[in-house]
Image (cartoon, rainbow, N blue to C red; front, side):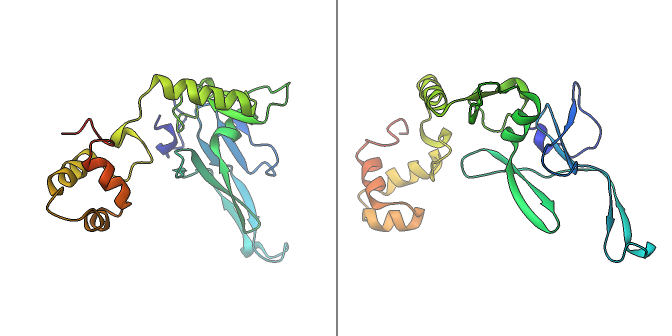
Length: 194
C-alpha cells in the first residue's frame, strides 16, 4: 500500500482520524495508516511576548520504510524526537486488545500496508507462526527477497565471469561474500537464473 506516501491534507476515501494517545494531543492517526501533526500554538519565548507565539498548521507526516520493510515516522515533543512504528500506532488507536497481546501482525504479510483491516494483535508465538505460514505460501527467491543484495542482471554477469576471475575479485566488485559467489557459480544459489 502506498497510502503512507500521500502527503495531501485531504482525507482519502473512507479515512477516519483519531488522536494518538500519549502525545499531548499533538498527533492523529488514520485507519489507512497515515499520521498527521495537529494544528497547535507554539510559544518560543516569554508568554506575554506576542511575537514569540506561532500557529503551526496541520501537516501529514513523512513516513519511511526501515530495513525490515516496516513503515516508521518521527514524533517530536519539546525538541525530543522519537521514531514510531506506524502499524503499532494504528493498532493502538483502532483495534481493541482485551487480551493485552504484545505484538501487531500484518495479516496479508505486506509490512507497509498499515490499514486497520490488515492489522491484528497477536502473541509473539502467533506472530512467528503467521510468518512461517506466509513464507511457505510465498517463495521469496532472488530479487524478490528484500534482503538480497543482488538482482537478476547482476547474477547473470556473475555467472558469465565464472572461470574468468577469482571468486574473491567478483565478490569485491559486487560487495558480497565470496562464498555466495561460489554458491551462485555452482548453481546452489540463484539456480533459477541462467
